[in-house]
Length: 298
Image 1 (cartoon, one colour):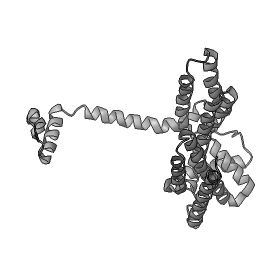
Image 2 (cartoon, rainbow, N blue to C red):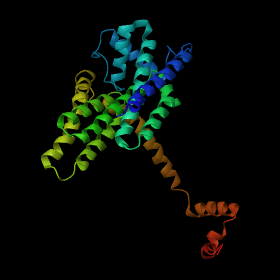
Image 3 (cartoon, helix red, strand yellow):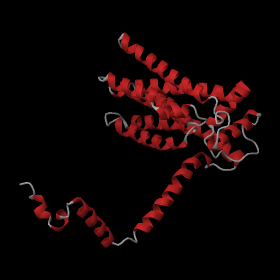
């Protein structure tokens, strides 16, 4: 890598860090800065109980939110006490800035001959308003995005030199990401299938099985202790996936209700709507005389 190329990650980091720091200074006087609403409030309340010394959550039900972010908040509360919201946002600014640098490295591996692709993507991430906004919120989105990209970069490095240890490490990182936002588990399953398919038939069956299994074992090493805690203390082994289920299940129910409702619409009604739209656009001939429509302009 040439010297100008080596400078690009630092430029990206400094730009992202500066923009995010400026944004946090701008929202510092907002009443929501240290009184987060809705999910942020539940995370803070959970963190307060953890910081009080009940790190295993004795006497509490199973985690209904992925627990890594509340534990991070609890650690910030222990270390910084009343400055928790400032220290947390500084940490998230750091993670968000490093996320932009990770975009650069992922882009370089995906497009090795097109450094401008990686540079533009990383610069876009540095200035992307939604990422900047969430870096300033008491929500796990920043940490989850950072861990997801670290895991993705590790998977890409596994393609350069395959080993069970590398896949295991990538799995551990994705396990941590799942303890931050559980929906990443859908990607984990797809990634394991891709590892199996992508290795090709030039390897033995044992090798083809070893690498995706090492990846899944890494994920399990992180998730299983939380599942045991939910089972032994909280009394429910399924709580880690509840956030994903609570998001997906209502949407499925709505779609099923809509599907049931739409089945009552008669075909003739659909035909009338299409005919009316074509008539308004002057293309009714397409419906009445399709063969003549094809000869227009000839």
